[in-house]
Image 1 (cartoon, helix red, strand yellow):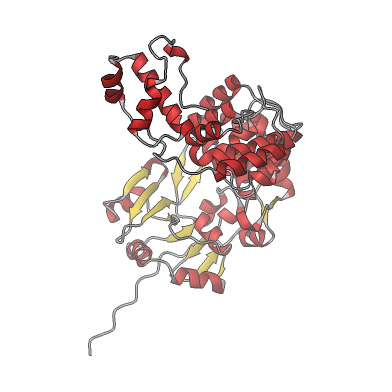
Image 2 (cartoon, rainbow, N blue to C red):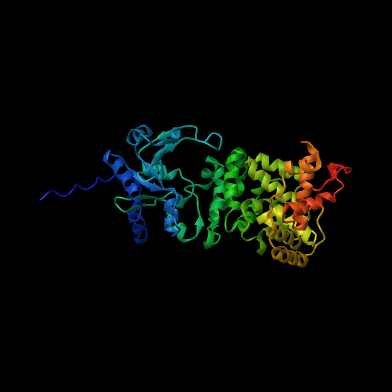
Length: 456
């Protein structure tokens, strides 16, 4: 009989305190993709240690669905050794010991060499990164206790030297070691702490006493964080299931003042608006626009540029903000144009108008419509039949040129816009209907700068 295959070697044992994995985590580990076991076996066969760390460990304990989630590794081998073992790895942050490994079945896994870091000179990045072999030393430098756990897959062990599992069970966010020191190392941890308060369907967690005090005392550390990184975390907070509660806590603690215009502790009306029942389901950008509703357009534009939103994100927030206070007339023609311009955002805009009024907020040029009237308007817009010819213009510029003799230029473009608006207002269905309307327009003697557009 052939000899049974030799068992796979185990990775180097971690030096942090360990305990057997709880049964739920054993089941999770046993369900991991085979390519993860292959990566672990490769590192182990070359005398290295490798552990699953970070958010995947935390969220696995919380029973969250990790399908499609990245799984991160900490490894005892240096970056050069890892490149030799995984030549197709992507050097995502090799100066900091981080590579992105390609799994055999197409997955991507971030692997970072165990590190010991010196003082943070600017509150953003370590001045010196020293690679080490101590798992305990690596976990000691992490931000919060539930992010400082590691799983030894081969031995089915949990390394949890800072009682992160206990904090998960008690639903609290607690810093590793001294809270003020963790925040001083990287000011972005202030925003990360607030983001971790939002646990989705599990509600809003709490800070332990030391971290709560450190967040208020050291909020000035955000001044040393790049605006791109601030937006990265703030965007996640805005998109959270319990964003309203987290935003209110940030306002109360004076944190919003560090990167948004104004003083936010006294903004009770804006906080009430964030908690309004009609705000459930808002996107992060819609929620952000609502938060800035009482700021003028110049302040909003400056804030969005400062935070380095993408052009697309900035335009979306500004468009939402620009339309605050504006409501379409109740005629079918006006509602058709309104729906055509805002598309899937028609109901959201009107709901936000209700929120503004019921929250006692004031914006420039606010329409006098009442919440009840706006509710009726939502129903009326939803009851509108679809446009016979859809939202696109039935005719093009060549069609107009043939019938008017106009050449290419501003007047032609404006006439096309005018006809398009009339097509939507009157629900025209074909070219013959558009031509009939064109014959009734005094376009030859009108000032084309005043011709209507499809806009709201």
